[in-house]
Image 1 (cartoon, rainbow, N blue to C red):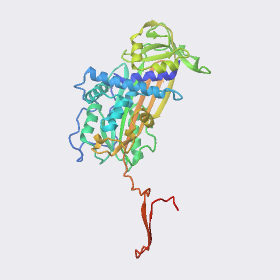
Image 2 (spheres, one colour):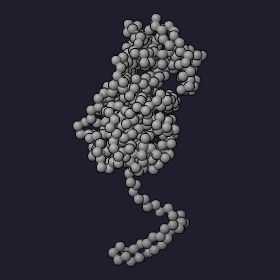
Image 3 (tube, rainbow, N blue to C red):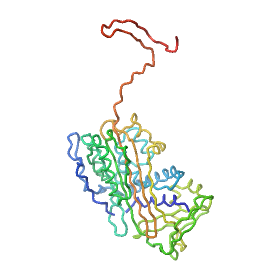
Image 4 (cartoon, one colour):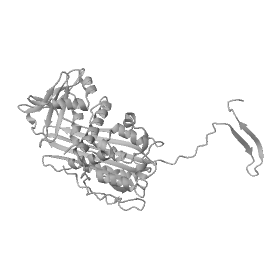
Length: 430
């Protein structure tokens, strides 16, 4: 059994069905609502919810399909990294979808290709409905998500962009002063993330990543806690070997459960079981490659393959052994996203986010994702957060590059009397 596969499948929990924590803004932060530089009216959607009045099941399906496709492609990139793997594709996609709303030209084309975003109407309406469904209160489990925009005060953003972020993503913009107090701004954003992930995601943005050129930070946070529908008996948990590789074995705390029916399927390459959470609306799928089949299973694992496996699930009463695990991951994703096909967004010379400000003055400097997961006898707790940091393109100093023929004069400064005069056509010739 491989914990990084288990951890990867847990991410599916974070895409569906409880109330987000009440948003509390810091005393020194002013919500952007009346700015003379803005053109238009900021959306007045009810706090904590999105406008999904026109959303259809097809809109939701389109967004889910895009998110899941990105999930497998990112997993394919991370699966060979050392250590455990865990991330929330929902959190990453949502934060970058809010960013994408301001992208134009080649920057937008590349972002759409990496995240498979559907058309404007489907993307916005589908995201709105999913956001509201996640934040629907449920007594059986806790599931919540929240979005926010953090903008440099007195910096002009287009009212239409801010309206879309709030209306369809519940991403209200809050003023901070990155120029005067970048460190204080960082702490405010990190505190917001920590509160909305039940203190599981701390110090998301490291010191130094927010600076005097930061103009906008977009954040998403998602949190889940649920108990198993059929819990593991703690008295049956025991120390057992876990084979990290053919050459190395460690001792893990192995949970055990029997005499319970679960959805199960098996192929020549793998076993898969579905462990439902209380309420039977969320579940964990655990994919267990057979001996020597890990690489083959990972190479073939995609949206279509997972759907095929899910269609083959059937009731089976088999003993289940699952290790307890708890870990945290952190990814600085700029290079990963560049490699996946969106370099323009990170290139200050090519980035086009004119849909945010009306001019090409911003680019993405950092994308940070952090996630936490704990699986034990009672159930699962998982949290993740994503921050997209955008900086203003600094004015480039003039460059004097004498890389072509030039004339030169040696003069007396006071009188201007020319003492020598010449022309260089080839500096390599004597």
